[in-house]
Image 1 (tube, rainbow, N blue to C red):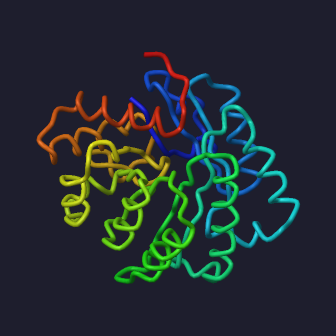
Image 2 (cartoon, helix red, strand yellow):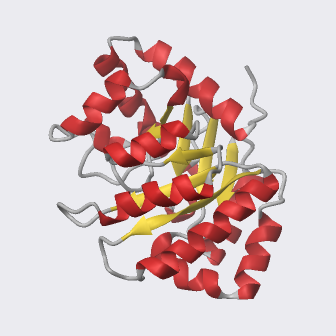
Length: 254
């Protein structure tokens, strides 16, 4: 089983790099966390890294030295993607223009290195400003390799991502009873676009909701996705593992 998006650098327990998982893709959010994430990828054989600047930290991406070091880290052999970048107005921490500049830089880096771009989108409760901005930006950028991380169900964002050939990654929020829009998308999505993730230590799935999330919990999300689609957990595990391996170019044992 592959957890396509987690944050091992936030996890105190080194066993979070669960050896029962074929692969874990750990995502940095600041320069310091990207350094830590790459170090974890060097330490654990089943861990790969994604490096970039989170939209809530996009001010950091304005610094030339930060961009230069992220670009250098991105060339590490165990770095398989760029991000997570995108739009987030939930906390009102960074203005949209600054987030847009950061996303554009990271998309250009992803295209330069031919690596997937990991897109983070979070709207205010009941809003859609970040989702609509992200959809428009995807169409403008035109980069064909990426992931709608922890997908939120927004139809315009889905349309833009699928048109570019992007993958759609479902996290623990898929298992929440009120996530009906997500359930509908997950049922209908082509199998070759499916990914599953934990976003751990955040976004814990049912039945572990309320606890600190760990990568091994990706199996709960996969099982829920399988039930939605009328498939077995083994079928979903096989297809999402294959999709992640191909998208990220993972050298994993069969």
